[in-house]
Image 1 (tube, rainbow, N blue to C red):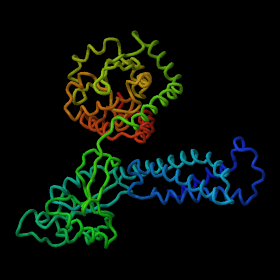
Image 2 (cartoon, rainbow, N blue to C red):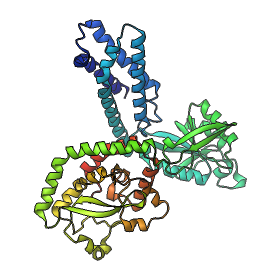
Image 3 (spheres, rainbow, N blue to C red):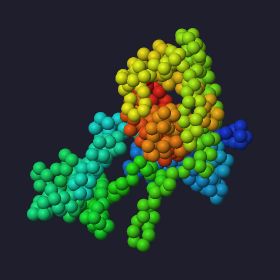
Image 4 (tube, rainbow, N blue to C red):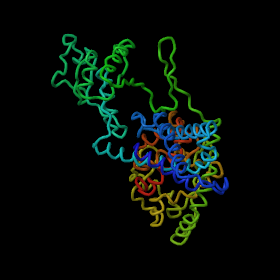
Length: 476
């Protein structure tokens, strides 16, 4: 990863210096071979140093969440600031040389983020195949808590954790039998969630070293007190292992969590979701600008899909459907028609063949879909007219799935959280499997997005949407 980052940074710095922005700054004269080598080298060295200083290579964030990309952006901005300051204070590197590197900034960023994305895909494939890139962890907690933690971590290999051992408080390790409250270290056959129990709280450091765990995950309880956690920290410190405390926060993004020390204790602060303010206005501006650009770029596809629908089946070109938008407001969503006219009236007759859960109706081989409509649905071409819904302000490029009024009528309180933001043309539901998802998982993803969205998350989802559309997975 460091090698590809270095190649991206050095290559972009060299390209920028060769181009040298003559049109903006005038003729540079003959810089000489020393300057021609030194300036790109200095720029690349400072850039690489700030990437390291901003912990962009920290294995706790690499390949895990969008913190990695934010650190790359922060490091790039820091590098530019340092170079401008150095140019102002010295005579070797001129401000003009640094400003010429404005070409290197977008080029280097694009290549850096592209290479990191490639690495992330490689890591994700390795984790799914079980061939590596996993962080071995030791779980500490009562038997029931340990079983739950083992199930969650080992059941989601794409998150990068694998449980290799467990340590339970003395009574729990012995199966809640007071007469066996002090089990022998590594008692054969004693397991929790299919993972061997390696001892009690006094053996955590030794057990972590034995199974070569990189981290210890602790679930707090009345037995595992703050003092017990402090002592666990001393144990794992001696063997060079990280200590992680499990917080029971369901579907809360890391951006909303911060730690505040207060009178000898650490308070975990969870910021409330924000649905307005500057961040919301940034999202609106992104939607409007990107929708204009995308409408121009896909105009040939819009024309071709429209002609295909008009020439192959009777009826209108578009299908208009009432959907529920932000704050429960009704709007008319526009799509290319993919079924014969009057298809909605046949839903009751096909109800027995419904393959979707909850209030949704989905069939993999829906007889109402035309041949052209099936192709349009597979590659999401029928949804392109929704760009006009985005431009009119009813929808966003990224957001929860647009819901039908009868679906919303059946919502419980948790599900109504998804109405706090505009519905989207794409979203976490689409890049995670679309119609292959269960109703419960689709709702969970929509609620998670509504409460945790950021402009950076929107950009990441838009990038993943292209891959999901090309694969056609879950589209029917």
